[in-house]
Amino acid sequence: MSEKNQKVLINPATQIETERLIIRKFEKSDGKDLFDLLERNNNRTLLKDHVDEATDVKSLEDAKLRVSKLSADWEDRSRFVMGIWLKKTREFIGNIWIEPKKWEVPSFEIGYYLDQGYTGKGLASEAVKRSIEFIFEELKAHKVILITRDTNERSYKLAERLKFVKEGHFRESNKEDDHRFGLLYYGMLKKEYEKLFKG
Image (cartoon, helix red, strand yellow):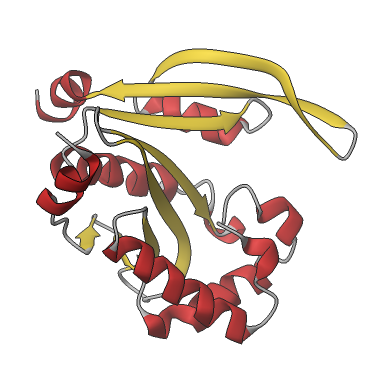
């Protein structure tokens, strides 16, 4: 099936939920939430691998433009970025982004970021697990890919906890600020998802 036809045929839900979280498509009114998150986690250089183009968001106006772009990306199916809110307090605590890699497979890469004040509570696992279901059920994926730095223990432990298969380790393949690091590649096939999540 062509990429164009594949995009037309999917009509994913714009909001999903877990026991503690609301995960939904960004709306234009979410700019302040995004800006406040970046201000709380104020090292934008550190965030750039986690929050898409975080280094470009220097003001509330930048954040409003960013969420408008994310909403447009959703509509044209170039990527699916969702914010994460706590159900109980409606506080914005992070995001999930899903990027098509190969529509003909189809395969998607998943990434996430959680406010540093909310790590260690199982919220990232909860959000990523529900988002994996979204990718397979709503986007009709055959494969989900998760790529993380080999120095990010929380992230690769999360992938392993959710039973992703480690497919590769590109050792010392990148350099930033005179520090070398590698990338770990994880994958989950639809048949593995069905066995783990449904079986």
